[in-house]
Amino acid sequence: MQPMNRRTFIGSSLAATLSAAASPPWAAAPLNAGFAKANPQNPTHQIDRIGLQLYTVRAAMGADLEGTIAKVAATGYKEVEFAGYFDHSPKDIRATLDENGLASPSCHVTYHFVEKHWDETLEAAKIVGHSYIICPWIDEKQRAEPGGWKRAAELFNKAGEASQKEGIQFGYHNHSFEFHPTESLGGKLPYDFLLAETDPKFVVMEMDLCWITVAGKDPVAYFNNYPGRFPLVHVKDYVNDPHSTSSYSGATGSVKFAGHLADVGQGTINWKNLFAHAEKAGIKHCFVENDDPKNAFEDIKISYNYLHDLRF
Image 1 (tube, helix red, strand yellow):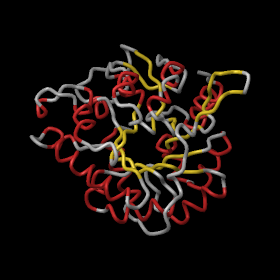
Image 2 (cartoon, rainbow, N blue to C red; image 1 turned 180 degrees about the horizontal axis):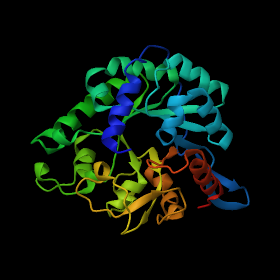
Image 3 (cartoon, rainbow, N blue to C red; image 1 turned 30 degrees about the horizontal axis):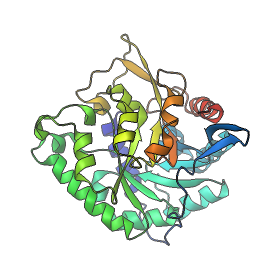
Image 4 (cartoon, rainbow, N blue to C red; image 1 turned 30 degrees about the vertical axis):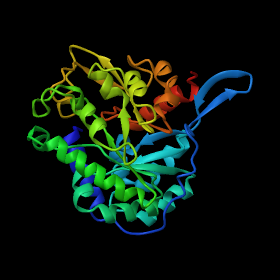
C-alpha cells in the first residue's frame, strides 16, 4: 500500500473513535528504555522491548483486531504503534492491549487530525496510553506550495506545545522525499528544514531508518548533529533490485529507488552499526514495519527474531 493510501487508511479508521480519558504516566521513562545490556559479563547491548507498527498487519487488523493483537503479542512483541483504531473505541483498544500484556507508546494520525481534531485526538491518546502522537505524512500539494513546509512546521510547533500540556509528545515520521532538495525551500532538504524550524521541546522525530537510507543519507550523521531528537525509529529493510516491479513512489518522491522492502536483517542495512548509536540518537522505542509484507505474520516473526538476537 502506498503512503497516500496509508494516509486515507489512518484517517478513516480514526474518524469514528476519538474520545476521552486520563493521562499516561510516561514522563518518567528512562532514556533508551528499550535497550539493555545482554548480560553483566558482556558489555554489548540488545533491544529488550521490540515494537511493531500495526500497519504491517493492517489487513488482519481490519478483519479481527483482537485476534491480531493477540498474535502480535504471542510473537514476542512488547509494544505496538497504531495506525488507526479500526472503528474500535479507545477504551476497547486499551482493554485489548492490557489483556495481552502490551503497551502502545505511540500512534500515527493524519495531518488533518493534527490540524482540525487535535483536542479529540489527544483525549483518545490518553485513554489508550500513548506517550507520542506522530504525523507520518504531508500532502504533496502542500509540499509543493511556497510556504507549505513552513506552514507544516508552524502547525507542528503548535500541536506539540498543546500536547505537552497533556503529557504527550508530538513527532513527525519521514519517508524518502524529505531528503531531496526542494524548489519551494530554495533547494534545502525538507527534513533539515523541519529540524531547524520546529522546537525540539515540542517536536521530535520518528526516523524511518529504511527510507532515509534509501534516500542515500546517513542516519548516524543526523544522530550526531541532532542528539536526542529521535526517541522513536521505524525498523525495516530493503534490497536493491534493478528488476523490481514494486512501486513506492509516494514514499520516495523524487528519490530514485529500484528495489523492494524486506524483513529486518534480510536486506542491506547495517543494523548493528545503527543501533550502536542509539544512545546518541535518544532512541527509546523501535517499531518493526513492512509496508509491503508478503505474509504478514511470518514477516513480523522473521524481523522479531533478528532483532531479538541482535547484539551491538
